Figure 1: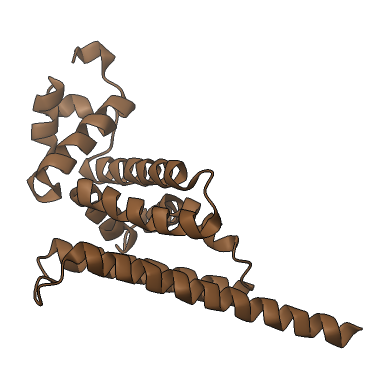
Figure 2: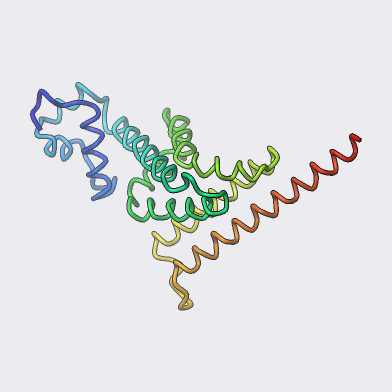
Length: 206
């Protein structure tokens, strides 16, 4: 890349590619500068340091996941959209394990940008949240279910990425399909419960 064309967007793009390929542990400003064809000092004209670059990459990962999920669920009925969204969520994490880990590692960090990254993590799954909202849960159940959903997906993906869930002769794909169907069954049960409660309230008002 020509030095005069260096921009924050280009820095983020190249950094994202490098982290996706080699991980955060093997990422440095010196290597990034070499990839961009500039001196390390030149990067400081655009970013304050590696921390800012990591945040920018995490935000970019959030946007990528959001767009992937949005495209996956578009035009589908809510049940189909939910299952398709879960499949796409796992696919993104499997194809971009280092970016996925970076997003959630920074979201849980105790640092200045943690709140910003947490918002980005929520934005990444916003298309799934909109699908869940179609099941018309009350506010408390909506919060409970989204926490349940995020914890379950993160747990499965983290365990599999660390080499667990291999015993028993049952493929992980089958387990994830089971997990997805179970989540959908729970969601449908909550939806029916809310409908029944709303119907009872309607009768009481008559």
